[in-house]
Length: 393
Image (cartoon, rainbow, N blue to C red):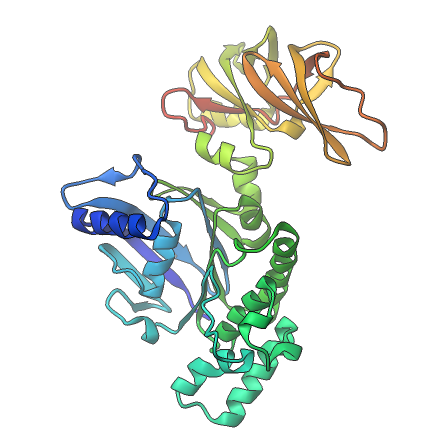
């Protein structure tokens, strides 16, 4: 168990390194997609910049963001697999910038399992302990305990090729558990699994966390994993932290347009609207309707002395209601999801998604139906057109 502190950490890939990486990927036939939004300086491409984070002892932190945002690079810097270009890293209060990976007392679980194919499950899990010359009895005890926690005791004498993807990932996690590290690092460990198995393994990781009670740093591009696993979420884009908060905080109070669109499924709807002020009260206007914002939003906007202006209005799909009057729209697509119907509606020149509970009834909305949309002032998010920041925060 340990704290992890990153102070102004950054990672710069020199231009020569970037060219070599692209060439190697091209030779392997891998994708070399362009990431034009990363900062390019005379030193090179800045993959991570001004990364500041304090992770408490036994906290579960999730780094989340789209591909190429710098989350895996950050994790690899904590592990010591990537050199830190600037800033400071502390694990359990000790400066770690120049410490070798084997001396950091961390364990990492990779996306591709990284198991030795010629070894049995037992031998894979025991390997790191054998290197440390741990007594045989203690190795057997630790392997048996980890196998029991992960429910893989019956597979201890099998080799990885005889296991399913989910079982292999459990073995990879078990190999990390036996080391009893101060910090667990997990780099998209579930991304190679199918949807059903991913859900199952997510639940297993939650149970595992409760049983071994150590510090976790978990990387994913899947916001559902981030929301369900993390004590706090660090949302990244183009190597920069966009917001840090609990899952509820980032869902209820997104700091900017990117976070609002990234967190939540289906993603938040955005409209071009006007923020107006009448008799010291704020309203949002669009589609011929005017909605008064809730008292808590009024207070935050007043405290920041926000002026009336054109804004981007964000409303989540489950916060929009179909009503007798309101914003006029037309149903384009109706997706039956079981307990609800997802309606894609053309309104205000946008594709608006509305979630309508079925309550056991047959969905009555069809393509081409004319509908009206309404929303309450307590769930409206207003973002600046210029900075894309949430005007309340």
